[in-house]
Image (tube, rainbow, N blue to C red; front, side, top):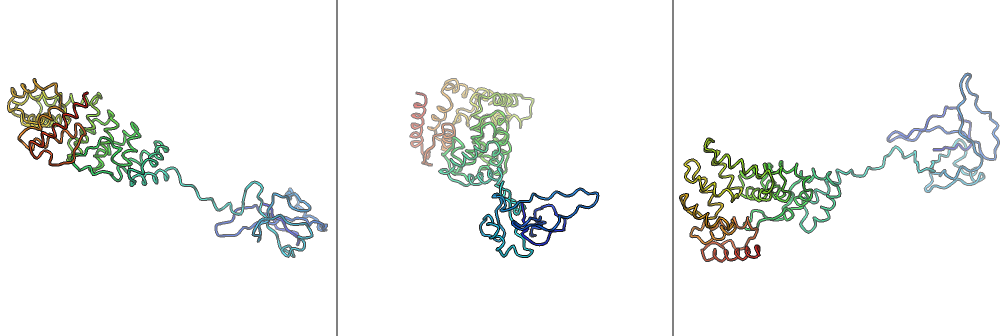
Length: 405
């Protein structure tokens, strides 16, 4: 900042250092002497005190100030001062009036430097703003928002997991409408799925959430990720109180069937179930868990324990769940059936079980077919009679033939 004194008595006060004003205060600076153009100065300069070094004065210039200086005091628009004659006629320069000017050569504004510019919103605020919008958006508007989430990288992962799953696009409680991917569930579920393996550390806590819809949604995301670290958390969800959570956890574990962690889990269940020295309750629980895994490879193992008093009833319930019907009461009947149909596969087992007199078992077989194939239907009464169940069986046979061809 440069300040010019136009006329008046010489300044005798010590020049202070220029400082920005306090909030709400006014600028207070000393005014250096400037010799009026065209008028000789008859006053001697002030003498420095004995033994002190004289303070250097600002360079004195004659004529107009340099063009980099803009007049701002009581002037609506900055303009350079006129010639010396015009400045002498300016009433603002009469007597002891002073003309303050602001230096603007390098873009530095000392008078307003104490008022900082508003800071732009930081990265985390922008992330949370996009996540909040994605949490409530519909399926037709999530694409651009998910693209913004991806542009933030891993910085957005924690915010997505915290707001997960957001507003659901479908009613997951409706029967015969299974979801095959988290992309059809919500915007946040789709965004979390796109992080892939980077989302794995967040999924175990989401699988233990208090809200059932969070556990269900996390199971669906885990199905798309299919990581070994999720096998144990998903296995714990097989004992969930909500049936839908158990079903989606089962489907997620089925996607992990080829992983070594999944094979290790099945081996532990087999060992617990077949070891007669274990407590009966643990053996029954292991048989039940085998059924929740829909492990068809365990069928011959289960058949051999039908005569076990401690676990026989649990084994039979698991076999009915896997096969779709109660084939026989004793081991020899089940052995004969398995020998004839072992190579057909579980889909064929369930299709053939639709033609049975028990309506409850027909309904259970249909639910398992929907979970196994992902092919639903609109009519809830499709298995009300055996004739309708046969029509549905023909539909699934055609679907299976097209799949195998």
